[in-house]
Length: 432
Image 1 (cartoon, rainbow, N blue to C red):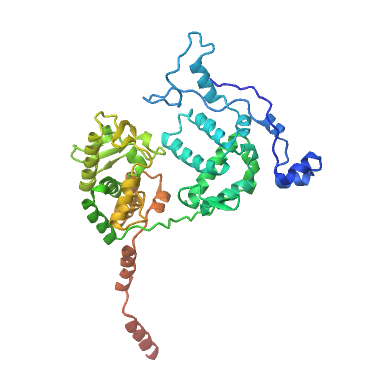
Image 2: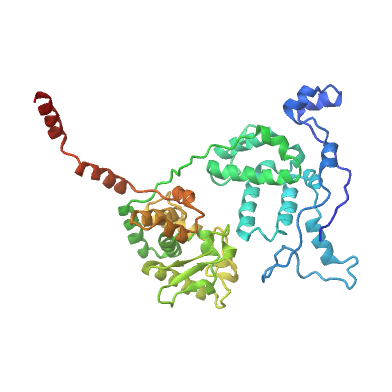
């Protein structure tokens, strides 16, 4: 059942300062309209926007609220002036014109609530989207969606890349850390999805150029010696124990931090002849990532240590999480998964103890894939373990180490005679 929202009169379009005066005096030429794309009357945009809203209620069998609504609201018997139905309708009956007139911060709240109505989008997708929108909000803030121009988008790219925003002559650093071009492109893509729903992205798209992203990953993996040093030093550092266990699991299974956070106790099969973990559907980004991963000796030991920790923190039910959510110091909620930052302090201790200050948890996923390929594991098997869609993603993650590349080129020398002997044989043929 779709809800239809009647159109309301919306505020007129706010033009860029360079065009405002010309628009008010009626002196905007058709050439200018074609050039800048911002002098089109906003009322016509509203007329062209669809009246039906996206989103459709569907039954989703889950213990949690699939729509992000308040399940404690009561229904009235005849559903007239019904609080529960009214809130459900509020989550669905959002038009593009309404979104366009909202300040960015308000628009993100309404749009995220609307997106949660889709049963196709996973929780991890919503989590990533919210992270992108939080970064965008530090730049766009109270600016209405309809007032965003290509110049704003380009300025955001520059400020985000430099991690500096100059306001009234002073440099500010609204973002915690600089990010890659790919991450910035993902942020702009999220902005584009929201503006597309508001029928505004077509005004930005002709002027927008994503930042260049290399087709190969520049990320380096640890050498064999560095990898051995990393895991030899850590057992003596109890303050980095959690990071050590997670590092050992990822380095031997390819399971990323996001996937590990979604593990429940019922997803562990540690007493089987071949120990395994099951990465469930609700902890991954796409349909190719749910999978069972066999555990070698070190990975099984590390998972067992994490299980003991979870039990100490109150995880006793099969549906409880392996990494419970931290409410406050020494107080945990095992019914909720750990936050995205649950490893931050422990990982900082790991970096300080080992000297690998640039090592990130996700780097060890690369490390594991690289090691398996170097050891002759078939690509199809690596794809099954890592949960990749195909070889293209596998190539992105795999990085053969220098020793392997050197050994490969050294095999060429074994098939060739020494240089001086080759030169002598050529000279003898010429003389003969």
